[in-house]
Amino acid sequence: MKSVIIGQYIPGKGLFYKLDPRTKIIAVFLLMVSVFLFERIEQLLIALGVATLLLLVGKINIIRVIKGLKPIMILLIFTFIFQIMLNKQGQKVVEHDMYFTLFTLLFLVIAFILWRVMVKITKFRFTFFFLFVISIYLTLRYVDYGQTIIQPFNFAIYEDGITMSIFVVIRLLIIITLSTVLTLTTKPTDLTQGLEKLMHPLKKIGFDSESFALIISISLRYIPTIFDEANKIMMAQASRGADFSEGKLKDKLRQVISLLVPMFIIAFIRSEELANAMESRNFVPGEPRTRIHELTMSYRDTLATLFSFSVLILSIVLKVI
Amino acid sequence: MSYIEIQKLSYSYNEKTNVLDDINIDIEKGEWIAVLGHNGSGKSTLAKTLVGLLEPKTGDITIDGITLGEETAYEIRKKIGIVFQNPDNQFVGVTVKDDIAFGMENLCVPREEMLEKINFYAKKVNMLDFLDKEPATLSGGQKQRVAIAGILAMQSDIIIFDEATSMLDPYSKEELIQYIKTLHKDGLTIIMITHDINEALLADRILVMNKGKVFAFQETEKIMKDKETFTSSNLELPVALELANSLAQDDKFKEIRDKLWEYALTK
Ligand SMILES: Nc1ncnc2c1ncn2[C@@H]1O[C@H](COP(=O)(O)OP(=O)(O)OP(=O)(O)O)[C@@H](O)[C@H]1O
Ligand SMILES: [Mg+2]
Image (cartoon, rainbow over the protein chains, first blue to last red):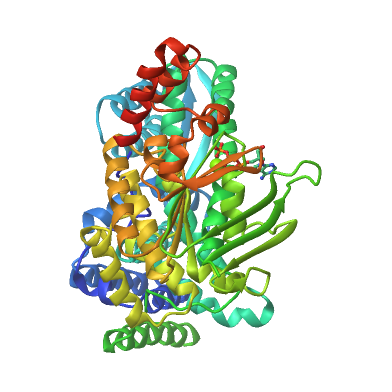
């Protein structure tokens, strides 16, 4: 349990590592806004191309970024399907009847079983999910023999449906790539410090950005410790016969509670002791302190900010025209 | 005037029973004091009042001429640091470097000076190679040494150890004890709360607490010769002394008993 990764940060060199976290946060924000302003698919495709180019220039491991996309792959596929099915504008591209018969049902069950088996025995979960979705479509379209269960219904894909779905997916892809690059190349501590500095002006409306940053950095620091602790408690309970992997829902619930109760008690003791340790080292909330971490800007930061500003202006200009 | 003066100190958590009851102690600069006593005898409470984490019910604590109060707590804490029992619950920083810096940041030490001191004190506690390591990758003993470096970097010259070795493995424990010895040689004042009599024997003076009161406070040599104090304090003694005490019931074994006492004390 010693190597619990905090956040997604991977140490490295490249251009993006050299940028100040504040610059990166601002740039990501500006670029995301521009991506929302782009209205034509060509513009988005160019944006995607530029984003990929930037990844290459910054020597970012593209594989890591793709891995970062994995958790939202299903979301992307669903967005795509919904857009295609629900958007009924523009010219019809495809139109045909869909059938749902006893044989359709049989085929679907087989496809489902195949999909689950393949997911279990191979690593390509998303590929097979995708194949499963396609097989549903093909079955509904071509399997028209056997006892009808649902009357044949009309299915059509419209031009705008296709463009919009591609549009939305690319937009999501760019946004997620941007935020992945941010978390991949910025230490969590730097990220919090950057946020702290950027939110500093909010002090006027009563937001204490320093305490906020301290809370975040303490939470980050304690994540591995608490993981460790959960592990120890689980092992202690396993040694008394508890089994966390098996059992009915009711048993599982009991086991989760038996894990949570000691963890909360320990957390209370811990917070008390930590507060004591901090106070004895002269920490006074809200008082000025110096910082060991210093954020410094260089010409690179100016360039990066200029670049993202010009992209934003470009997107505004394109929208107005 | 002594370096640390505790006068008529009382404390209670619930207003009913006094956890600390009329404590009067003087400690000189550079002394090594061991504090012994049963669970719940008030050792940790005493330590917390000394650094101003708890406000005394009655009585005064004066350190280097400054009397502890709400306004002076900040000044007092510059002089006195505390290392707690659980190494994990006092590690504030995300890395070793951050943690050593934490106290200095609170004292508004300029960044350049902090960097110098971090290097200096990390080297002193043998943690220079670990500056960028996260606490999850350190052993308990290493974390305790980082805590010490943080206190030293604040230029404190009194360190309280509240059972700081009790969660360490025997090797790290011995290492930390050796390290405390060098701090003592450097002239720091050390107050070491412990349950381990062998550890206590290293101190110049031993304070035995019992039910919130000072049961005994004497030079280590003297207190160890004073069989009465130890027999009546019910503390867990080294095996030789335990044996001696049980032999004490019978006059026939008087000679053996005295030999055992001698052995335990000279060792
Ligand atoms: N936060 C608290 N609230 C109420 N009572 C407390 C609190 N902390 C300690 N006590 C009580 O005060 C008494 C002294 O506790 P203290 O922690 O000072 O003892 P100790 O000598 O350090 O014991 P140990 O050897 O177990 O560390 C105990 O009876 C304890 O139950
Ligand atoms: Mg205690």
